[in-house]
Structures are given as structure tokens and as C-alpha cells.
Image 1 (cartoon, rainbow, N blue to C red):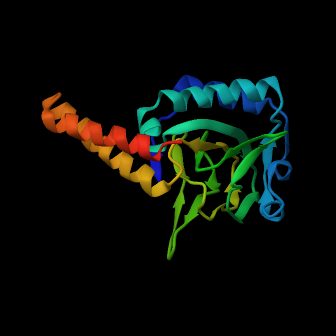
Image 2: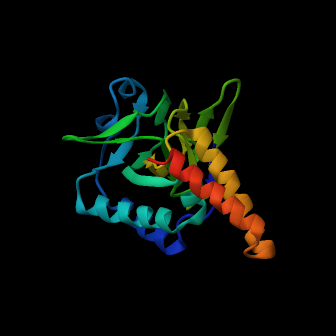
Length: 221
């Protein structure tokens, strides 16, 4: 399940992040890639273990925490490994899949769901391409918007042809490991909220709420 989240970041959030990144020090993006992705990763990333990176990660984390669509669709247990990437002209990230586990020093988290937050849109090329079974879809969203997609997909970033592409990328360990179960819960929750908006707390709403709650108990971890 792929979800577009328009205006995840406020204008103030976006301004603070982009102005900070304009003065920040970037390093070779290969440093954070798995061995199989290093040959195709050609970008730069903000140094992760710095106070600057920590402050910017907090902005993105708080935006995800407060957004109801993200919370409902993803059911996050832990949002982790947020990185800020820069793609100048000619830079790209070839076809790859995200590592199943991320972390270090005995603290590892599963990557169930990936997200890309687009921090600017004044560049050409650089589309995020998600591959399906028999097709592929390219995404370039407005600044401040996010794309959420399964970490299990094959995806790539096409070469930037003009300007500079800035994004925040991150991963989530979900309370619901199975993507089909997450999608089913998302659909049921969407219907539940629609019923409540139309008629309030009815018998049908209560029965649906019971089913959603018990499915969470059954599938949650």
C-alpha cells in the first residue's frame, strides 16, 4: 500500500529544515548503504551523529507523530533511521530494496514501511520510482509532502538533471508486520471513522470498533 501525505510538514518546518541544510556538511551516501546497494548509491547525506541532524530528525518525527493518516495507515511501533539526502545534477540511487533490519551495537529495528519526505520541488529529474509486479510508478511530490511505501519494494531514484533534490528518508517498524493486514486495518478504520462522522456512536460503529480492536490484538506485536 502506497500513501501520499500532502503537506506533512508545515511551512515553518520546511523553512527551518531547508535553511539548516543549506549550511550543513554532507558526506558520501554510500556510508549508510548496505553492501548490495553501495554500487548504485550516488548521493550525499547529512552527517547523522550531529546535533544538527538530531534537531532536524525531531521535526520530521513530530510531524509523523501528529499526522492521523500516517498513524492510521502505518501503525508505527518505532520510527527510526531518518536520513537527509542531497542529490546534485547527475546523482542517482539505482534499483535496490531496503535492508530488512537497521541499527547497530545490538539495537536493530525491522524496516516494514519506508517513507520519503520531499523537502523541495525546484529541480528536474530525480523521481522516486517504485516497481510493481508488471509496471512501475514515478513520484515527485510537492515540497513538504511525503510518500509512504512498503520497505520490501524494489525502488530507485532517477538521475537529477537540473537543480538539487533534497529529501528526508526514514523507516518504520510497524505494530502490524504483515502489509496485507495493515491495509485491511486501514480500510476498516477508514470506514469506522466515516460511520462515526455520519451518524455518531451507533450499534454498527460499536461492532466495527470491536472487530478492529480484536484484529489489532490478534495481529499486533
